[in-house]
Length: 333
Image (cartoon, rainbow, N blue to C red; front, side, top):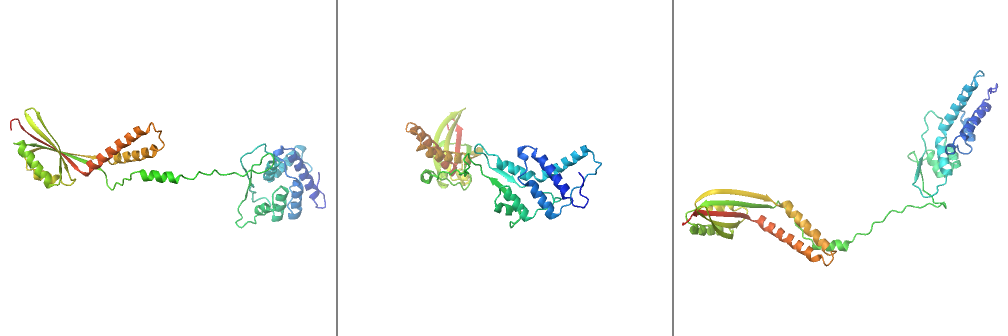
């Protein structure tokens, strides 16, 4: 088809757009252009005086003509992809509740002609959008930010189902307070260390040495524990356990004034972690005691009492310095 000689090329353009519209209508349903798509394009051409596409010469072969028409159809398809997808999504009816679909407007390249605010509003209303959404798409929003249209899933009757966030049950403050009151709180300002020292002396008389030990204990405010006597390999050995304040070991050694010091060994054991673990376990078991069946409560109570005795023992041993004193002499002396 040749263009009109008087310069009015709109007749030829109309024929091209009609062929492109026919090509688009032959595509699948999900890519079908919206209603009055060709009429809106023609209105834009007439209003904005868009330069027409180059007219093929009369010598163009039919194959080239079909390729040229196909290129024009692809161009129109790229231009109306966003609107076509949106119309296809609007026309499809969901059979049941489905996740929310977010349809975002495609970004038009800078090389394409820009739409005015009135054109965007008309196109948006024709596609089923509200006037407020059309104003947002035309760039009238304060920040000119791209807008996102969110479609709420609808039921078969067409009513939207608002999502309801799960509500957490209120905390049982009364139970928490009762458990907190029953728990024992331990604040460790420093590590808990059990200090032990072994002192072995060779003495001339056990009776005299025992009296000297008792005097030395009184001087450092210590405490005499267990006392035992044994014989081994021709020697008589007197064993004494002494509890001293943590910083009085050297003063106690100087106050003894016994015979020759044969052996002096010290051992420090850090029980901070074990202590805290037992305290945590006791608090947990006490919290479970109220919900334990009556038949199992006696066994659980015995376990709690055993742990509390171990905690008390660690408290006492870490508060003092334990000294094991061994005094040996030959038999008969």
